[in-house]
Image 1 (cartoon, helix red, strand yellow):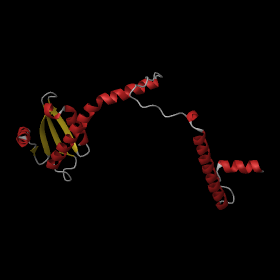
Image 2 (cartoon, one colour; image 1 turned 90 degrees about the horizontal axis):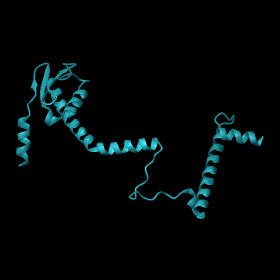
Image 3 (cartoon, helix red, strand yellow; image 1 turned 120 degrees about the horizontal axis):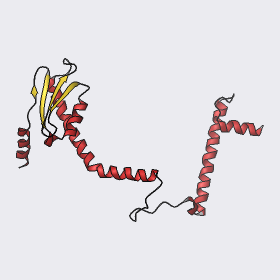
Image 4 (cartoon, rainbow, N blue to C red; image 1 turned 180 degrees about the vertical axis):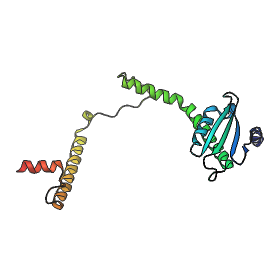
Length: 182
């Protein structure tokens, strides 16, 4: 059943007319969509001169003429155009399906930029606890980790100073420490 529908669609499509210098395709706008046709034509502009003719509501003729006829044959241009057209159809279908999401994100961005942040809905998860809500044990662990990192940074800076006796590569902090000790 499905294979009959696929072959019927393929039989209804007009095959491209290929000459020695150009490929001519006739596409149904209702089947292919105008935006995907424009998108595929745009993608071909680096390899071919593209001419679109016809009616925006009915059929559109696409003429592809290679910019470098020795490098690209018209049959290859037509095949590439049809592949680009298929990918553009998927791209525009995804775009149509995601339009409500993009509109919501843009609306939220405008609200935040205006300073009118919407109230969080009940379905959103509870926010992370603030720093003031940390337990004493958590605070001491954070302080211990910070002191370890500071000691490690100081050790690394001391090694750099030893490798650089004139202090050319010394960090600003190291130079300040040296100035305060003098």
